[in-house]
Image (cartoon, rainbow, N blue to C red; front, top):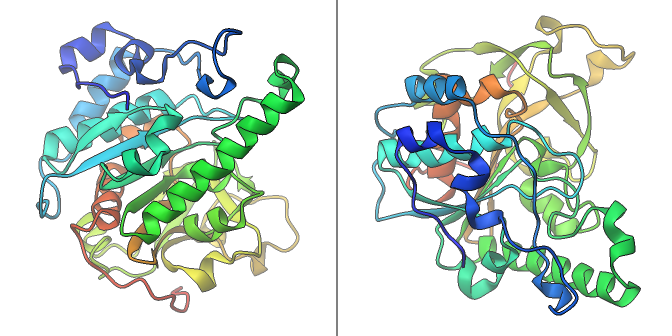
Length: 331
């Protein structure tokens, strides 16, 4: 396993996220190595000092619940297709959330070796931070760099590692998905049912003013965050989902979009669209929390959203309990 020691905030300001989270910076496939030595690499821009300062200002002082034991999470953000430029800030935010509140320690790494079952089981939970596509695979544009046999080896590894993640959750591990964690692994049915849904588009783009309904104000993951609010407003990209698996019928939806109080979109069927935004579910002995909120940079410096992430992660890893059975929509 490749891991990091979190630096001080002063160090965060001085160095790029690519340097900070060196765990994902590994040598590309070379002839003398096995093709299975290939690991994702991303040329992310450094997090700005302004964003780091805003993040520090927004962090909660404490978590909603103390950890039942020492907790360790893996933050993974490899992308085979579209890569959100807010990912580097998201990495810092998730790590600082755990560090500041004492809720968990963090390993930030895109090393596929962390998804071997023996290694996965050293974590209490995995956070998928906006991965896309078959995230253990190279971009399809790179396919010509590999022989057909090598490509098939990588594909088989991808399928096996996704299976490992699902086995980990069913065995009691926690899984948190942020934003495009639903825009991934479309060919792997069990991934879709485990994360809770598959992306089908975003009629509300990154510039949209949206109103989010708090469907279950008293849920233990919601009450400490929204404190009795019926709704809140954001400028954010919001997803809709494929019919199967259906997020509404398979998960306990906690937040949803109110189309009537959000910017208009060019769809004739808008009055018929159900738009879940955040949900929880039980998968075997494990727990899953997902939220589609996470596209824009400012989301990771929003105190409300940071608390939303924190309670969701704590639910997934077992430090906050709450019901997971599906329920009717609350409007």
